[in-house]
Length: 273
Image 1 (tube, one colour):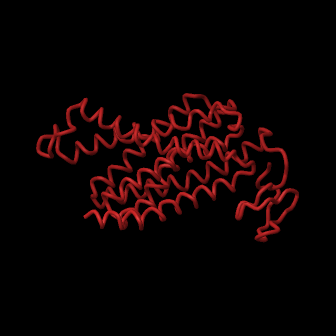
Image 2 (cartoon, rainbow, N blue to C red; image 1 turned 180 degrees about the vertical axis):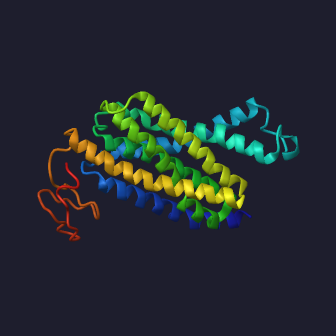
Image 3 (cartoon, rainbow, N blue to C red; image 1 turned 120 degrees about the vertical axis):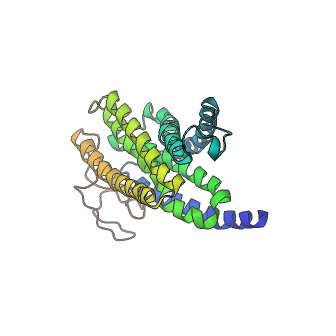
């Protein structure tokens, strides 16, 4: 068993790191103004640390309501209903709140200077959470299970957090109230709980429902990211008309409408600095 677990970790760790790198690379190079590497690393690490906070909080509430050590036949309701309540009211609530708190320090930083930064930094906290959680799950589900989680679990956390970050960014510039941020946080918690229900119960129709939630959230976060870009331009938070870095390869491209390294055409009316 130990040797199999070791082999699973050897196989899974590079995949987990590669998936995280590709996600970070895409959104980092999409940023027309490069965020400080120290802040990027800090928020990602805080997101990873929030896994421990979420775990102990979940254990505390499980003990508080008296179900931590109960067997399936001892649960107050049926096993299925009990798991649904736990996922919906506890796991989604605690994990989304943990990621939210992990990213909050950047809200007061001078580097949070655009609406789009709300999505970016909240998604970073979600990425850190997902990376650590997937690493933990290697010992439970093996390398094969982690590959499936990379397609859903790793990306779900940044998307769910980025959704909140959009409204957090709008609130910072007076386009939304903090009540809208709170509503987005609650909505993200509920979506997270519903998503986990299908994964945990492994009932085909619920698993399909979880997949649909994940895919819709992925698409929605890209829409919000593009919308935030337009709003940043309207607010004058982006005033130039060229890329400083190529969004494909990251090569410096100041005052050029194409990348001199990879040849990608840079549309001047799409991303500003």
